[in-house]
Figure (tube, rainbow, N blue to C red):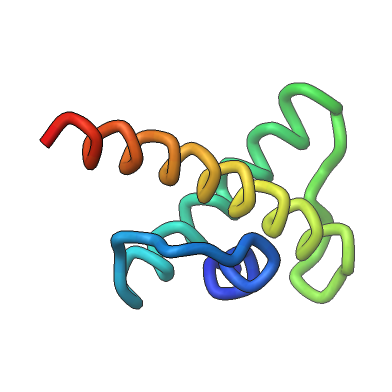
Length: 77
């Protein structure tokens, strides 16, 4: 999911493949949490499109947060 999120939101990120993998995993968890806690939507099974879309939205949110935080850090130095 991290690689797909970076493909949807292209840009120059200060992270390699490990950061992309972490964004995908944690973003999927974040999407599942937001989907169930805020909207009352269950993630469903592994092969359901809803599960993949929720994980993708979580990865996009996390990628946006990562860019904001890493951008602020780069400006300070």
